[in-house]
Length: 504
Image 1 (cartoon, rainbow, N blue to C red):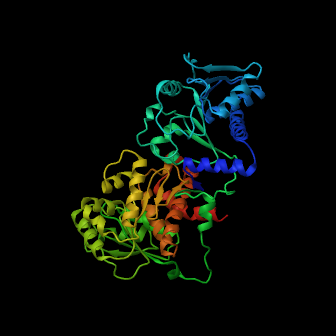
Image 2 (cartoon, rainbow, N blue to C red):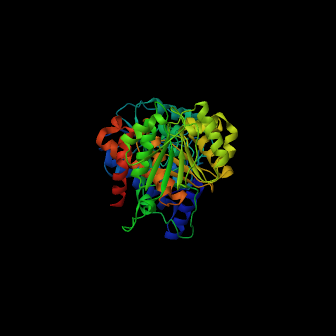
Image 3 (cartoon, rainbow, N blue to C red):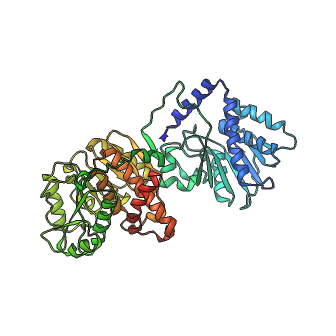
């Protein structure tokens, strides 16, 4: 699914209105009907509901919702903030008149002073102050209104987007004056800002309301941002030819593990094997021999010269893909080994975890990462490489720049893991859960990426598909163990089941 900018969504709406031969008022009615239906499906008419409408089209939606709720026996209290008197949009003005004609409607138009109601935990607040057209932080009395909502214990429902939040980038916005919605009823398309961790407390639960917009018509919208869902991931899976053997599915060299961290190597190897790699070789210090041969007997073991850490990384034979990093430590010998390897190796590689930490200790090594490679940093690892960032939004902007300049695919791991390609395209993952925030989860992901690449999947496809399957395996594990009980080994065990679930 494409994630469009606010401007593109506006253009799609205008194109739909033109293509269907309807008016803006008709579109407002469609939006309000979808929102009112969702509200009515959650609460009975006896529920106390307060509706707050701003002077724009988001306010028009809120007024229309109020009228539709009245029609179904609800008794909402509605406030329209018309503080500049007669500066309502046309749609808002018409819906004001329509609500005034509803017998018994508790309607209050605020032009100057406002006596706020006492909001309790038993109340529902419908936030229709401002939508995605907002381009500057809230000011004046609207800041006080947001504080009223946020400091109350009421259940807050925001129409389209929480008031005060911008649809894409919120750098420079003051989040103190952004509504903290319990539920966001978003029209047709998700907004990019919904996928940044710093905005989570403002978004709450998100329900997408299908308005049946004409997506093509006169406009064929493009986007640099995509949400990867099950149907997109399913289309990428290539069925296996029954007349094949292991070498048809590629070979992986996995440089992983060190004394005390051989579990990382085990998890990465299992991820690669479960993802379908034909042959996996683990390069690790000699202390890891018994561990690998016992825990992953399907994998080959290549001993390093060192007993405790990897001190010499060489590709003694040709491999389909080389992945380096899980649990290798940041010992001086390993940093030197990474240094030498990066300066000699020319082909694409996957760099994760401690490999990235080693590079951050010698920043000049960033220039030695082969073009076309894949790096999979967590937020902490990303900041070690590219400097401190306060928000996920800042990291994504930096990742887009670094990916393009260095010709790297960057996998920003998080709740919505984001895969950034050198062409500026960003793929946001929709699978996974909080239970995956556990040691070793990223090691499994490295293995899955390597396993898909080894089989011949194009780099762009392999990474995005691996991230989705990894998240789906985590979802399957959470179904069995709960989010509290998920361990990385459960995720590795679920990779095969995730493929099966997608193939159904």
